[in-house]
Length: 134
Ligand code: CMX
Image (cartoon, rainbow, N blue to C red):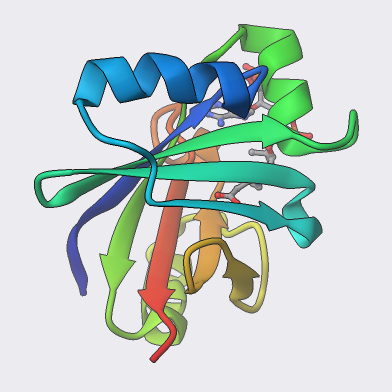
């Protein structure tokens, strides 16, 4: 079952300069910066109340973030929903007709197992499922 929005991902050209903007906007410093090699991104996380914002910068022109910025410019890239059991939620969504971007969960940033749902099967929104690694 999907529990809540875990974070919103924002594609940026430079995490370093976007950090300065989001520090001013949210009034807090990022609590973590992490490179995710498998996704070819560098990330930065902010907490605002119970919610999180993830800034994502491409580390390679092959990264999904590079392609996104090239096509659509900087902006909201994905919405991540927290789940307790990612494997059963993936199975559930697959049975409901959603297109998943991987057969198995992958290791994502911020100590999570993740899987994406194609934006074409969710009204133009890239959806991420994430489960905390205990
Ligand atoms: N949100 C909404 N639509 C998106 C999108 C996004 N984030 N990314 C791509 N699209 C749209 C494109 O605009 C395009 O639409 P049109 O056909 O109408 O032009 C369509 O999806 C296909 O886009 P594309 O540029 O041809 O890109 P691909 O099909 O090669 O890839 C996608 C799209 C979603 C499969 C790919 O970006 C992907 O695998 N994403 C998941 C992985 C990811 O985003 N990793 C980044 C880091 C994540 C993290 O660590 O948090």
